[in-house]
Image (tube, rainbow, N blue to C red):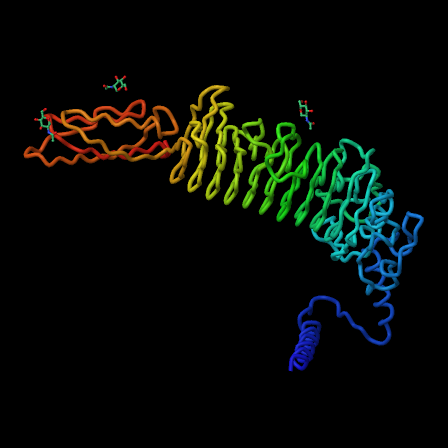
Length: 497
Ligand SMILES: *[C@@H]1O[C@H](CO)[C@@H](O)[C@H](O)[C@H]1NC(C)=O
Ligand SMILES: *[C@@H]1O[C@H](CO)[C@@H](O)[C@H](O)[C@H]1NC(C)=O
Ligand SMILES: *[C@@H]1O[C@H](CO)[C@@H](O)[C@H](O)[C@H]1NC(C)=O
């Protein structure tokens, strides 16, 4: 049944093609495929196809001294699988001997392999070629770079790569930057991006305390998925320029520990360093580093991030948003585990549905005193009764004086001082004046923008009453005669000015 339908479908497709060919392109010269010029046409088509592919790919042998096995040795035609098995290039899966050249040779073959057209202009589509690490553990002595830029749709996956003891201290195990020795003799038009749709998947990268794990430079739509990156001294992952690097389901830690490490004070380095826009980090654990995630580019989103990298009490930071004046960052559904979020002069920042444990809090740090479009709602905070505020205003560089559209509300806290921009309180009294003080809950000093109140009195008289003063976060309500009354007051600092 299925097969029959398939045949029908095929048939229809052929019919459609013919119909379009005959009636659709009236103004174009007829693409006549008669007996006479069939072979000429096919030859032209073939040479056009060839022009799209790299010339040095099929014929070249790997630059290592080992010959690749048939499984990775490309045969003629386009039917051979493009899975490049690194052991076929002589890589040593025990990690004992240097596999740098073998891995680079496999990468070079994959990169220079057949391609079909382009993704972004100037990015050759490698069709999904795979560099398969075959579950091995490989030692390398310098960064793995692609030999040319301007390629996409390529995957490196399935094994462990470890830096050698003489690996360059500023290197990255996988470095998606333009190779310094790249010759620009390519036929393809140059792209403004280095790479597009490169997938790094199921990899354990061990930087051996020499440099970093992955750097993604000026690339588009990069996947880093199910990677475990450790022993870095610089960055676990560096993302610079480009956009849409998606880091997910990954674990990063300078030291392999499960918390409570006796050397936690010495943790250094940064788990993920994002110096570009429009990236996403989702479902990622950072278990050891001085800074979990450093962000200096806009419009990035963080979801399901668990930071227990280095306790803020020891000088660590979970997520550092160092882009004052234009932040445009969302942090949701994350777990800040003894590590705080620091944001410098945030403008457009949203933090919600997250859990802060161990006196971890959110520090809004004044640089030029700007705080605009910040929403911090629906988070849970848990601390140890040390009087730590859930949101702390760091005024060491001066106070915030441009505050607008800041909403901190509906958070809950145990063992920490709750702070908010909206608050409600009731006060019972007997007399002519009710002084309701919101200083211990309101985030900003002296910034109440809206007050609503009601006065409830069961006595025999109906007093006149009015708000008399709303300064320094105190609301004063007075009556014209002494009465026993309850006042209910709601204040709001978050309205736009
Ligand atoms: C941690 O740092 C301290 C002070 O810098 C040093 O004395 C100690 O040896 C370090 N510990 C480790 C394990 O490196
Ligand atoms: C309010 O104060 C007045 C005068 O002190 C007193 O007579 C009255 O009982 C008080 N009412 C209540 C409800 O406390
Ligand atoms: C309002 O209260 C503040 C002290 O909280 C005081 O300095 C100010 O003079 C009061 N304003 C009026 C109009 O009473």
